Image (cartoon, rainbow, N blue to C red):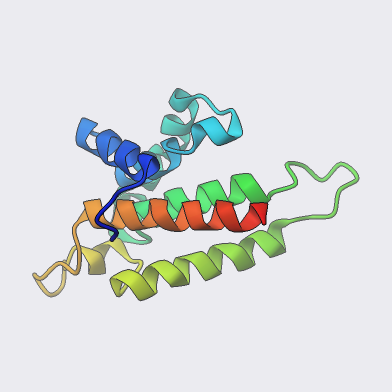
Length: 142
């Protein structure tokens, strides 16, 4: 994690400190870019915290993937070419980048449920998911 946090990372950390789950902290940090009100994103992402409530895919990662989907999706299929295959490819690539950084993208492994030794704290997962999301969005503008 960078020593100097971006404004988005700071915002996500503040959300998490306020009680947002990991998915909400990441996803709600990008509402402004997509014209989504925070209450809506908060509600949409609530079930994705704590690894979708069952310590599966990390909430910070799912928050990141929500934003990738927002950026990449065509929005509907009325006369448009489906974007889901391309979105899946990008989601997989960025989830893999997260895994390379943290050692896993599963909440139970990150929290060390089986080993008793966490790999990283949630705050680091959130910060790195936000940074990867920022990298993704910047790459789409190039």
